[in-house]
Image 1 (cartoon, rainbow, N blue to C red):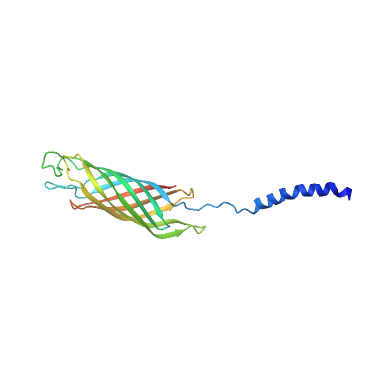
Image 2: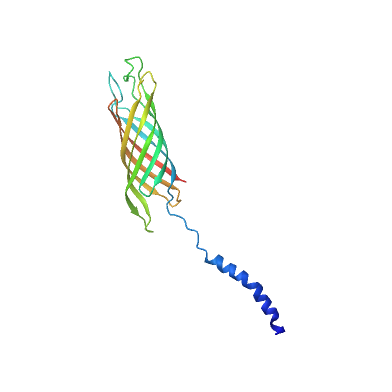
Length: 204
């Protein structure tokens, strides 16, 4: 029996270590979602056109321009997102455009629009791994439009907009890219516009 004592002692010392290693091996591997959803930040930008800019008198010429928008929001499940945004735009109108100034000012104008937005995913298209990375969606919102120069367009307006878009969730998990076409309407001045805006989105 004395000859077996060293083996018994070694076994007694080794058993706890083996049990710990077995417990560690039984832990489930940490998994990640293929698409990250939650709080997000997105930036949009592109051409923005106003068909008939606000004016109480004088011509209302077609006005091309550029816009940029920053949006902060949250995903509510897989299909619905709600957010707030700030949009800036600058449009050309020419010297014949006098806006609501009565002839005291003329030319180009810009706007700053804070507001709220909602987006709903309609159809998801799966990739080879059966992950719905490509989505067709509709997005709409409303904001309070402030114009510059104020002498040209002294009165704020309500901007409402909506349109379809296409979004692709990349394999970087947090990032998605997309493009959308949006129709716009200024409620008080009855002005119409539209924009084509590529976008980049990051989910935290």
